[in-house]
Length: 101
Image (tube, rainbow, N blue to C red; front, top):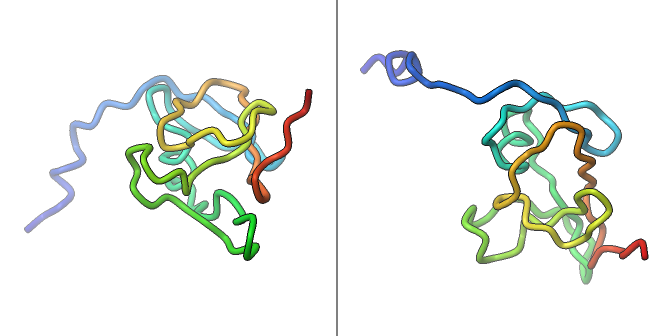
């Protein structure tokens, strides 16, 4: 089967960019943070608190919380449920996250 036909008519949103760990990342309006990162090959979204292990997207529907990241200085934000905004700042979360109050 020719898979190329499956992608011919995909309409993407407006191109935009956000920052992930200090690097500019291309994305499209309507994508989640996790989807945009996966599209660029980024898989590690956080470091676990207890064992310091890399974590990534697991359920993709906001139930498991494996994809939490620090977004615009707010820790524990589910990247699979958060839509990308132009200029947003996303960081790999280390452990439980640190609140900047």
